[in-house]
Length: 207
Image (tube, rainbow, N blue to C red):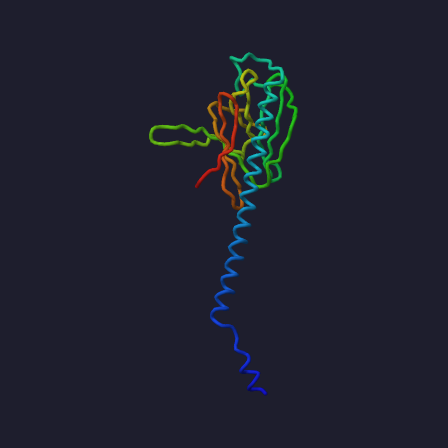
């Protein structure tokens, strides 16, 4: 009887082992792909939230009364702006308004949380005959960054930044925002700003 039992216990064949390994490999690959897609989706959603806030700021800038003339609209005098800042580990974009430019009290008209562990970098992108150059001017690691829009055209008036309690500094010519994760995976997203019109759209960064 014992010999009969041992003869029936043949174990797995080589073919069965190969099939089992293939099934495990397929399941593992699918799990990795799904895990990566979570980060990819998070980046895409974050970029959409940024563009939505920017569009809202542009619309509000054109709708609200502006105390300055079109010729003098810049980052220090335009009334409506999109404010980027980090609070409790999350990146936010607020649409803010100062009735008399930078000298009056700020009111928040719209607020959007982009997500946890995000940062936004603000770039000047220039194209030459030899290629494209991206130069980061400021990011939200240490600064609150405001993007200002003109009432007259909706175009980007400029970008200004400051630390808590610090003085306001700024520049014009910013035409791209790069959205990145400070921790974890995820392909960065770049949001192109069309200076003249204020239009913005998302374009995935290919590393």
